[in-house]
Length: 387
Image (cartoon, rainbow, N blue to C red; front, side, top):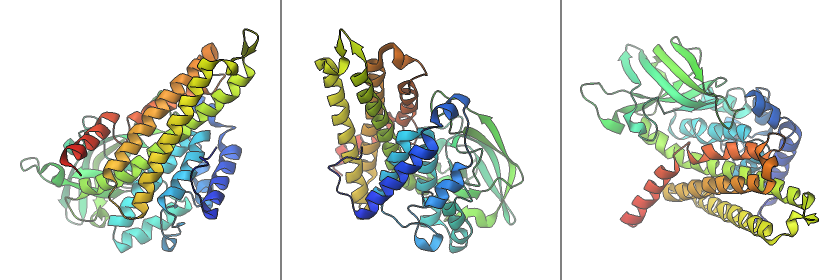
């Protein structure tokens, strides 16, 4: 159910149809089992790459599709309707590591990594958070020190999406010294690959939702990183990460809208079939009011998201708009899935029906890539400053 109010080009309609067909054939039949078993299906990576869905925002010279942000978000929503775990893998890959390499990487770095990432030969990940630095990301402690032609990294990264299967990770580490800290200006970005000495995958989180998307800790123990793996300028890593997160927040908003839409569509189908007091519960006004509010909030969230995406495609700074879209869409997903569970009654609380999975998946959209509280800080500061 793509919003009929959205004006789509023929190319965008084809993208939606392709994404929906892939989701219906490859994801929907398996999503519940993957969630139950916390199973990440690695065969999805080359399949998504073959469709071009892992290089949607990359130009053709890097084997990408060179699409606009709106086209990418339309595809991402369709994937999220069927399986939010696959959607977050696709979102992180397209929004964070590929974009950081595209905008800040050297020609040699781009040539080495971007085309394989677009083709699905390398899955990308992003490593900013640490055990003691989440929302306060600038307080990270992972330390890098220069030693000849290498940087030596020591520390741990937390909450790394796709960390078990990633072939390239954009990781932030401090390049200032403990006795001369520079805050955010002391953080640099590094291109990490799993073959580096001192690299290992640590604890895999046992999560409430998004269970088919592996979230892990990465451990850097004297990890030797060639000097040419420094991304851009030393001390600019935090800035690069924040700029990329603006795009990432649009992806999370699309994912949240997909989850909300899945719950809404399931609820619409259920209330027509479920009978109480001699008639389908769809005939009760209280039920219709819930569906009306669901539809209205989903449409509003999608409109806010695509307004921000259109602005980004025009080259406008969308920091505040991205935060608004992410905030509203994620809270919409939580509200819609909560009410979908309510409409299903007791059946909504059991795993036989999908709405309990949608409910669990929705919650993290209010947390990762900037909590709702952080988004309100961004929006509030812009309001006070008049920007």
